[in-house]
Length: 349
Picture 1: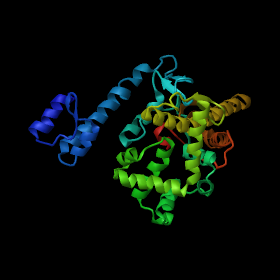
Picture 2: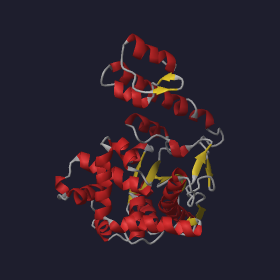
Picture 3: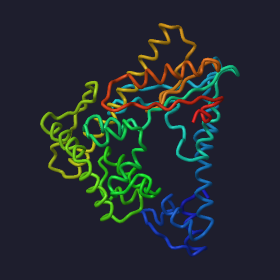
Picture 4: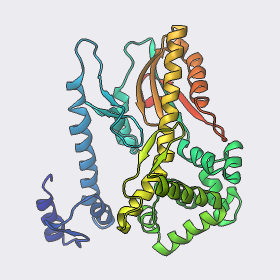
């Protein structure tokens, strides 16, 4: 089952299932192909489950225990300040920012991350939709800013605005489409990319993007201004002044130029999110030192901070952490921080 060639023989020769994609090495059996075939034969779904389990076992279950330091009984990863070009921290040896979160089975790996003793808990503090809040801040879009200020479900709100209906009338598909567009805007996603991501025709995806920008013209203006400024200056800056040179922003090659334009906008948003959480980390560390708090910062996972602390101090320290994260940088929209704690990392959510 670990041989793509032999699996292809079983699927397409023995079971006579239709091959949907070919590569230079032959008929593909990648995830996309297996997902398409899972409606036609149960073996495809079983193979997807097997591959997921195999990856979890090989990458985490087998490897992580062998990387524990005997002296501390802990994993000690490296966090790299200057690897990611947007300013985000990256993690290595092992990469603790890559612990699965998207699937229910993958999330079970987080259950293995526990505090050092039974009187302590793990606490997770996670910025809520921080990149969209930064988009609202930079673009100064009044409608988006008001939606965040009122504490609305931003994806449901955008879906309602684009479709011209009340938020209560938005169904799950419409919300999912709006969510894909909200985040796709930040990463410069095309209509083709959006159509692939949410399974709609390219023409419909383009209409959705057009309707989005018609409803939120200041966001389109913000994106245009970031790109034009990058063309003139050759670089962009984050909210705290981190500078990134955008090499191909004036390239004659269309694809390189488009990629550079996406990089420019993404750096301003994602890089500013990195500025924000780093500022919060510094402020929390200073309070730990100044007030001699029994609080250990264990991990930073992009928009999330993970701590270890005494169980009886959890409510007190949760308030402190939320306060520092929410006020690290002043934005034009409120910053929301989701905080939870439990006997392992999984139970924090």
